[in-house]
Length: 99
Image 1 (spheres, rainbow, N blue to C red):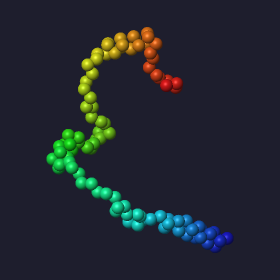
Image 2 (cartoon, rainbow, N blue to C red):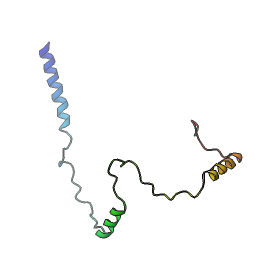
Image 3 (cartoon, one colour):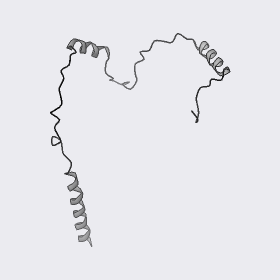
């Protein structure tokens, strides 16, 4: 019984391993060498200035985006008053399961 299981396992392993070789490995795929190559018209200095202006996300808080928006000129009281007026006119904020 063990001999049959070992033979069956070997046969199945060989059959499934054969499928892995059907896919191209690195370097065997089609080479897209017919694509047109365009030279960049941007100067090195412009690219450097753009890189300095937009630092990559790195460090402990790399998932936190920098807040570049201007601070709001509207006070909390003004927002609350505008919300009350909107609700009085029938405009409600979409919330809950039906939003």
